[in-house]
Image (cartoon, rainbow, N blue to C red; front, side, top):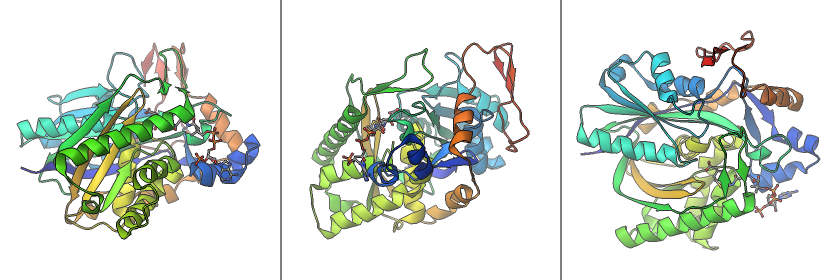
Length: 381
Ligand code: HMG
């Protein structure tokens, strides 16, 4: 029985800041941001958007009335939780108008939990093949104004429908997880921005990738030539390059060159949005499928990484007609509005913070279907 990703959709905010402008404002060389880090634009998050509105938007792009009838479970993977107890999945379930006989839960392990969501969904669908599971990976990546991590911020959500006879990517059985207690990036309960040991985190990421890959090879005997492309969690696009080159080690063969050019295709959207945390690997997959040279039957390798830290390498086979089951990301990104660095800073500081029992946001600039209107009696509206 084939189980995997049947449909995918992405949503981000309608505003972005240009990173060359941000570099100049911060007194940095623009090439450091666009070449050294590999980011061109970054999603700007108005106070009226959060993981619930972004997640609901992504899911609404792919769910038909027929899909809703088969849905057993909704899993939201995030590290930008809006409540220590109540799952964001329940708010999203409500906004999407889903049946009350649907299970709704939130998962956490930094950027990795989107992949945990996909694997758990695969298990649920395998046990009950008539049902489908909606996995949403939604996050707002915040490091703070004028910090080294600022250039790697981002926001957005990827929604995926997991089913039998999937029409995008059929998941293969072998996956390798690798977990260690590591302090490379974390966010204590009282913090609205992440703490990070940036350079260390990039080294841990590469080490975890190589560990997973070596074990995967031992188990399956597969070689690089068995892959049409490798896709990576992309906290910033240069990270994918560092990981791939860590594996290729200056290999100039035709196989290595193909993997390099497919990596470039997988980075196109992340360059314009930034880190999505849980959703970054899956936005990279969408970018590869829409911009790379991928054909039905090709094997794709996916490396998921979450700080703290956990890595997983797994694979899928591309299905015929896969392009029909993805939303047009390039179109959505092209429709966004550029805002100044000053406007971005103002919106960054206006995010709903702690200790605000009552607040009402100005909704006149947000025309989306789903908006965060504010908070009353400590309850989100
Ligand atoms: P930094 O110290 O500002 O940057 O922080 P740098 O000085 O290391 O420079 C970055 C690169 O730009 C270097 O290239 C420079 O040579 C180059 P590299 O040696 O890395 O190849 N450079 C230039 N290139 C062209 N023209 C120039 C120029 N100047 C310099 N003029 C850092 C960089 C990534 C550490 C920082 O942005 C950061 O802390 N980011 C956040 C942490 C992060 O993203 N880590 C990634 C791995 S961990 C992960 O993926 C998990 C995560 O997503 C969270 C989760 O799991 O939830 C983060």
